[in-house]
Amino acid sequence: MVGTMDEGRIGGYFKNKSVLITGSTGFLGKILVEKILRVQPDVKRIYLPVRAPDAASAKQRVETEVIGKELFGLLREKHGKGFQSFIQEKIVPLAGDIVYENFGVEGSQLREMTQDINVIVNGAATTNFYERYDVALDVNVMGVKHMCQLAKKCPNLEVILHVSTAYVTGEKQGLVQERAFNKGETLREGTHQQLDIEAELRLARDSKKQLAAEEEERRAMKELGLARARGFGWPNTYVFTKALGEMMLGQLRGDIPVVIVRPSIITSIQKDPLPGWIEGTRTIDAILIGYAKQNLSCFLADLDLTMDVIPGDMVVNAMMAATVAHASPERRGQQTVYHATSSLRNPAPYAVLYRTGFRYFSEHPRVGKNGEPVRARKVHFFSTIAAFHLYMVVKYKLPLELLHLLNLLCCGLFSHLYNDLNRKYRFVMHLVDLYGPFALYKGCFDDANMEKLRLAMAVEDSVAFNVDPKSIDWDDYFYKIHIPGVMKYVLK
Image (cartoon, rainbow, N blue to C red; front, side):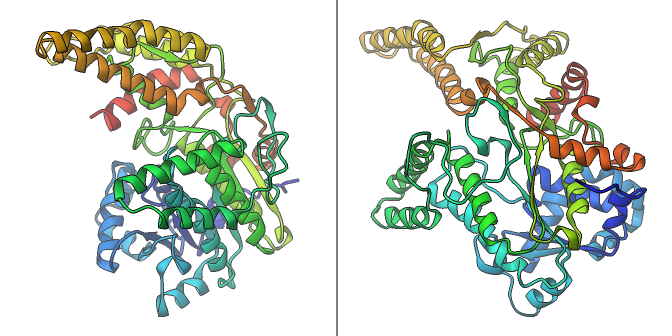
């Protein structure tokens, strides 16, 4: 059971603490850095390793890709002219990379950092569903190994927090527990084949050696990742290697308290510091953007099924609350999983996204190339793969073959029509290939540990670090915050 937290304990914990955060240039990483600095200006230091050839380049990257973002506007306002000196005092950019031992940090800098660190947050990951197998293993698995090795060199380390994904559990149905993976566990039922991480690393290395041409290597390594993932029961390379990363953490963590936070589909900031702020195209946003551009006339989705979404600021609140709850000697040797999800307590069906999207684009139409407003059109949804494929054959595949034939006969007269239809066909097929498994996902994520954590919070913390998905009105959030945010920050 999580013990009762003192008044304002979460913000208070970070006073005079040094935190190392990997993945700070990512969406979640930026929100975490901003929140720590805002709620606890007396944090000692925040170490940010970023890929860069030298210290000056690392500093430049952190300034432009983290601190320079609109997200830090509230903090900039609060500190006024003293903002830059505040940042220089608190933030330590490091030229490093989690794919290397000690994250590529060396010498006196490494010695100073390891003596200083109290908290490690591992948020770095490659989230590409079809990443090259060697790259995904380097970042999502070897990165965890290097973190654990570094952690053992930190005498004052109190807790490790590792960011995973709720979808490491594959395509399970029913209630999915907050449970850590066992060593060698697979999701493929009826197989006696053990999952051996070292063997997977060797396979990727050996396969890469046999490939000569760069283009051939890239394609072959992507296909290898997908084949290995599906062979063991995971839908794509991303969630498979994240599961392997969790297993690696379980093996190497030692007696340091470990927290694994598994968010579902992360969406824009709901409340603080900038409602609607988002970066990059998240899972459901690719669908929204396709709809906004009128490239999406159909999609594979059951509108009655739950899309498990959670705002980015709520995930960061969960991360900070879990860090504080587990940073104590009594937690030594423990590993706890938290689902930062909404499907159990406040499920949002896909119908909410479609309903609010249609309403938003009807009331705020985009302007087309001709200067005329683009009318929001209905989208056909298919709740089975068979029905979707049949529709795609009739709507796109047959007309494409006919246009191709006419093009040959008429010396390319129909090229423009063919290319336009082919682009729409490829766009929809690509989206469905990537996000189809999520759109038909029938699992529901248990969040009992997260609920215990929430109930243990002091009143002051439960407001400042809200982790309760029941507090969200999904129609209101999507219509007033998320969709305008995607339009403003992603589809500029």
